[in-house]
Image 1 (cartoon, helix red, strand yellow):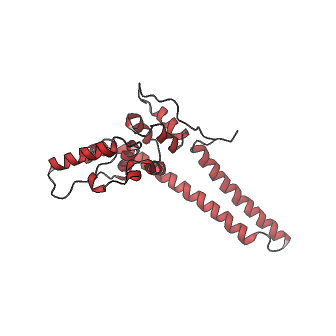
Image 2: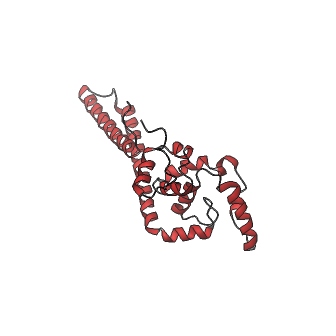
Image 3: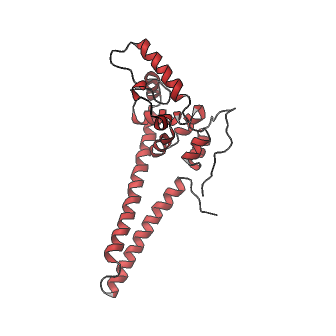
Amino acid sequence: MMAAHPPAPARHRGIAEDGIAAYIAETVPVDSLVAGGYLAGHDGRLIAQQLRAPQLRQAMGHSVCHTVQPDVDNFFQEDGEPDADWKQRRVRAVRDHCTVCPVRAACAELALRDGDTAGVRGGLAPQKLDRRLAAETARLEHARAADEQVGEEQHARIAAGLELQRLTGQYLGTGTPQKRRENVEKIRDAARRRDELVSAYRRTAGWTAAA
């Protein structure tokens, strides 16, 4: 089973080491990270960088934008809008929504992964997002590659499960005794393949055997 809550916050010293952030990201469920305040602020930025894109999107279900559903136009500069007016609107949007959002660090990180810097994300103005996008190019490329690998592994697990269902429905109990034995062995091989993929996922996701 997974840890139910994050370790005690390290807010006085900050999470300065990527290893600590990675450990928390890998062993604590996203919902518990949100509840513990670990996806907001400086600590949240470091932890969000260790999460994969599906986890970041899961965290967005806890965002103020998701629960309150504000006018999305508040986060974008209108065509022809003077910069001074846009800045005032932006400050209000950040104050009313982003600063109280429990997943603002995850929001900003997801915007960077997607290369989406057109509007306010995670409390950051487009100019700040662009600066981070330029400064963190290598890290973001590595993160996107890891996200792609996670997606491929998920597709492999789904395909293995579907193959097991196909073999079970097509072969079980049909044909001669010899054929049935061969079919059963095919089904067992497919089940082992599925179980291996699921077990590997659970290990990387921080799951351990139940007590």
